[in-house]
Length: 166
Image (cartoon, rainbow, N blue to C red; front, side, top):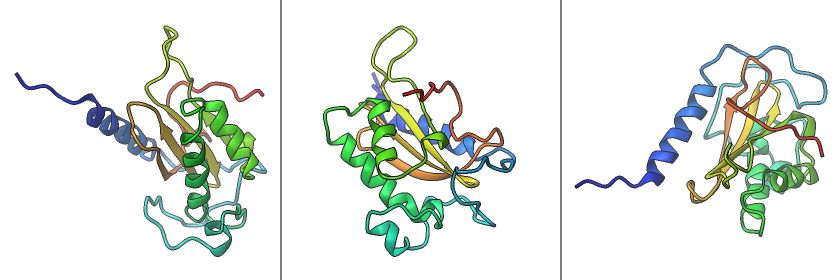
């Protein structure tokens, strides 16, 4: 009998959802304070070398989402290596402490609809026309971070997100 490992399937399903997030029309003008406006930047998983300020660990508000990806990734890995690995609030709070705009963030619930711990959670920061997106959880393994195009709705994540009201 062939037994499939659910971990690669979960990773592939997540990648498909994140890919489909980029298959929407371009986003409308962003609300003020949500990051710089991208001129003609195309979605990029791999991007040019980050600016010196972003790679040094400081937020670079004038730079692109790709330039700020190393900082985003560092913050995500720090939370992942701590005691609150699958707590959406821990990631949001850490990203805010690093200088990212809380009003530009989204996060999925920490628990399933029946109250079990989520197998993975996603969180994002809208950055102009793009999004810094992270995914963590027991079904993922190591944290995954990327830059994706923003949705035409103004958000970054498809599906149910929870209010960031703290």
